Length: 218
Image 1 (cartoon, rainbow, N blue to C red):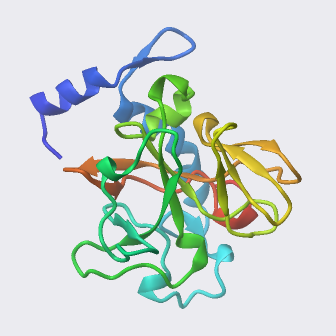
Image 2: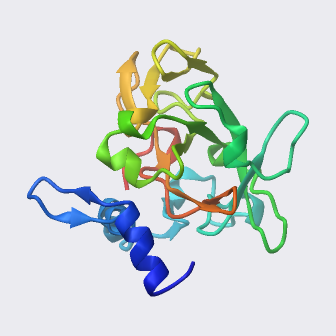
């Protein structure tokens, strides 16, 4: 990431206003949103911001580690499996791409745990709430691919509602509103993963907003 003047320019282009009238840039908003989770996590054993209780044991293999800051997102299915997801591949409001995080240095894809699967989708920034927009890049937001009710995979996009959908028990989530539950038995928001763009590739910029699969919020 470029420093000094370039940082200032980036900050100015992502300004938002808080409830008390103060201006925040996208970088500061990310710090504010993720800060609470980081403080809670500091008192427990964590890897990548996710409590180890979300996994089977402490001996986690590298490919099962949760998304790490700096990982890039790669296709998890289809003809482009293993290839980086590009911002330009996504069409606004027209469905998502399913992806895994990958260590760009080693090429290791973190497909060793199903909680690592994520959904990348492009939305209209003007329809996002403030918290969602702070974690988006070029209209793209990335969410956990696992329903927070009983851990089924998110399996569809309801275009007319602009909601993710889980066929197991019909829960729906609004990606424009920080993963808010809009229907069904799920009670927890869908975890959101902050991202940045490196060229046109999507890069992990922080931790999930809560542990995937219905575990308690960090």
